[in-house]
Length: 308
Image (tube, rainbow, N blue to C red; front, side, top):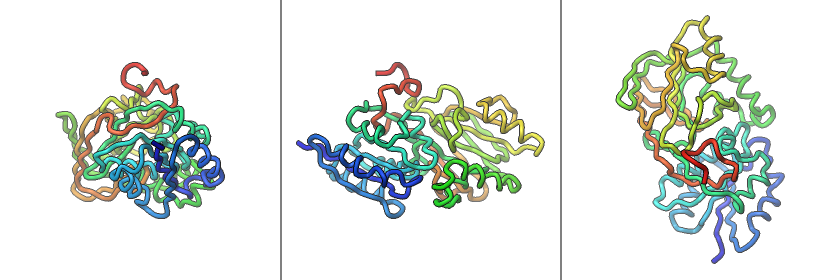
């Protein structure tokens, strides 16, 4: 029987590199006994809806997705709403591609496509945020609006620098959020300027700021909270974060399987770099090894236990 592959891609992701390589990608994906279903996205939730349609009805055995983290986010939300699951080949093509870095996937589109032929399956954790799902991060506070507030044209031209430049302008208007946070039997209530629940080696293009020994399949995400602090404390705080040093008195860092947030007024959250909505309460739980990605054979440091 011919293998059926659903190819979902965002033609506007990043610098539109996927459009330049589209014919070559299609040729690689149609080699051998395969049937390719091509589904370009035109608006929000196109990727999610395509996955739900084809996976639920058993009309594909594998999904290839090309785009930024937002496109992958939609694919995962579609997959997690299906009883049936199929492997995913991720071709990073966005401006930052944090999750692609964590999976050690090549930035070269044609090399990444070869994972459909040569990759090995890796069962990856996925987290649930209320009734939505996210792959690698849910966050609120400082800078979290940068990725979805930065115009796509600016992202395409300047790449990661656009996020940094756009974010720098918000330093003068830092918001404080009163938040009660409970996790693994512990409770803290304070004013925070930033918070995230994350499972990734990279956030916003910055490497190593999510803590040591990050694993993508151990059933835990990293909880990272930054307390409100004095202006003169911020330089030291930023320096500690960039160095992955979490003994600063204004930082809370824990590994969690489940966490609850509550606040007196709605707080805007980003999920995988996209606007996720405003909430007074948020319940996050980790689904261990929920989705299978095809990954390079040199993926070693991000797995629980020994490499297969």
